[in-house]
View 1: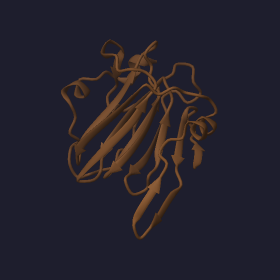
View 2: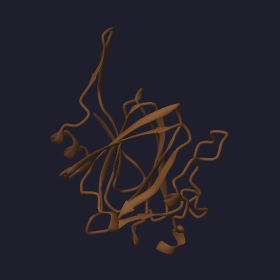
View 3: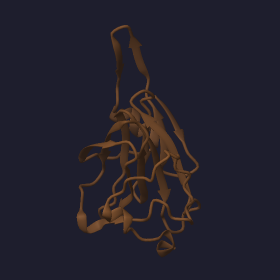
View 4: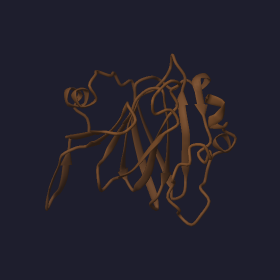
Amino acid sequence: MKATPTEIDGVVLIEPVVFGDARGFFVETFVRKTFDAAIGRHVEFVQDNHSRSPRGVLRGLHWQDAPHAQGKLVRVTQGAVFDVAVDIRAGSPSFGRWYGVELSGENHRQLWIAPGLAHGFLVLSHSADFLYKATDYYAPAAERAIRWNDPHLAIAWPDLGMAPIVSAKDAAAGAFAALA
């Protein structure tokens, strides 16, 4: 596995070794000791989630407040997404910065997003199956969101030639400036 830290502390791009031949491929998607070494600490995952969305769906930017903050290990098994992590940690040197990367069933990349960061993704393909492991349980009362298109963040979402499809909750999300 290749682990590449990003410019945001707590966001690590993970590229597992893929063994392929005429029969298909094999990949270890999670090995605790290897993952812990890659991110420099041990985390305990308590919940796995799976969503399927059609092209143009944008989910995010979401997080959960402490004490229910979630770290997430995200990946795509079918299709492709543009995945984004945003540093919303007050006092962080990278506060307000974002990191984006394409995750797909073809490239097998994963992204570790530490607790305290906002997360979202845009489906680039006809559809995408998005899977993630979380370090805390879903807690609706702790769930928060900021606008996916907040001008302060200026996230360079890929242009699909259509307006993103967002939930009513995400369309009503607050501004990043409210966090500052």
